Image 1 (cartoon, helix red, strand yellow):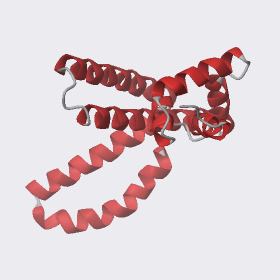
Image 2 (tube, helix red, strand yellow):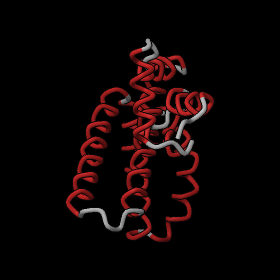
Image 3 (cartoon, one colour):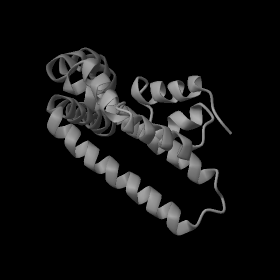
Length: 166
């Protein structure tokens, strides 16, 4: 079935500007994934590299932190789309399911390692917030009478932590 140029442009826009994965962009616009891949390859041969346009769009949005955040968002979307695909395919070979999930886990692990190097402040904020949460749980167990005062003070201190690391 031939798709109108408008659909091709919509898939490209979803990929480049909305930062959706190609598979998700194709599904969003009801286009077979193979068709979207073909369109992308044909566009590249014609001088329209969707990947370069996507990268430029990410960078144009602002700084490396925005790029990393957007990349993390794309990965989360891809993970969700893949899990949904696995769930929607009950007769998929179990080995294929495991391979898909292992690939996702590997990609996620690598991305998180890069994220920590590129955005150490964000990583520090996550650690600081985790420490505060754990300390709150500790207070609740060991000194429950102090828990109310601790929570009250923690709300203001949380803002200080966010300013320092966020």
